[in-house]
Image 1 (cartoon, rainbow, N blue to C red):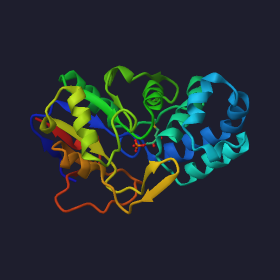
Image 2 (cartoon, rainbow, N blue to C red; image 1 turned 90 degrees about the horizontal axis):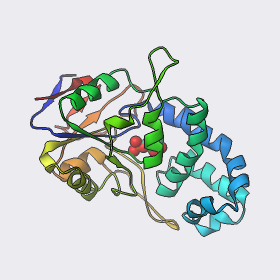
Image 3 (cartoon, rainbow, N blue to C red; image 1 turned 60 degrees about the horizontal axis):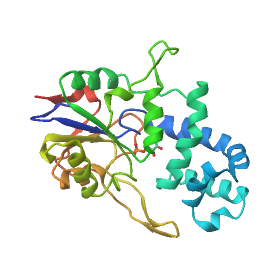
Image 4 (cartoon, helix red, strand yellow; image 1 turned 30 degrees about the horizontal axis):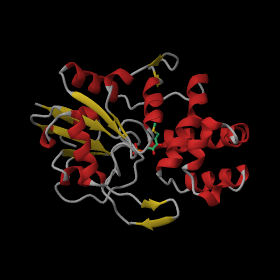
Length: 258
Ligand SMILES: CSCCC(=O)C(=O)COP(=O)(O)O
């Protein structure tokens, strides 16, 4: 795949899953970890004031009992529903795993060198993920080293620009990208969004009401807002039905900024 060259880029906004880390880490490690610790966490915190805001963000009918909530979270996770209240709970559940060393983030080999070089060149870096901001920060604070032992905290590369669907909006809506670049203080055309995701599956309108869409498009949403954008194709990512002319790369090393 040829290198993709972008001119005049001042800010790079990165998606997480399938872009900087394998989808399998999220689906086969993070999600099962959350489900493993969930029943115990819910039982211990059911009446805790600190858990109340999280609980109250779930639909009332799923809060009939701790068991009902656990069943609802299993169902959402199985369907990989990227709804904010699930993402917030997952972030809370992953904390013990990162702190104990059970969870270590496996970034693709090309990622650290490339984003560090962009930072060294004065580019502003940001994350925009469906994962909650809390989860994003833990994810980048516990990056595995090449020797498999040492861990690195990369959060400083992105401070203070962490965006999720709560503080920025839906990833398939152009206005979310407009909000992000405005907060980053750059012009739309001076920002580059990199994501594995052109196609998605569902959108929640309210906790009680679901609408499904066959397609929503992150890369195209960013382009529609006037940003530069490229699709990142990693091994194991689902095939993307991308429009002719979409810029695609197989690694961040193929993204050239001049
Ligand atoms: C550390 S965030 C965990 C990943 C996650 O929960 C997720 O849904 C990834 O979504 P993305 O928008 O980054 O593809």
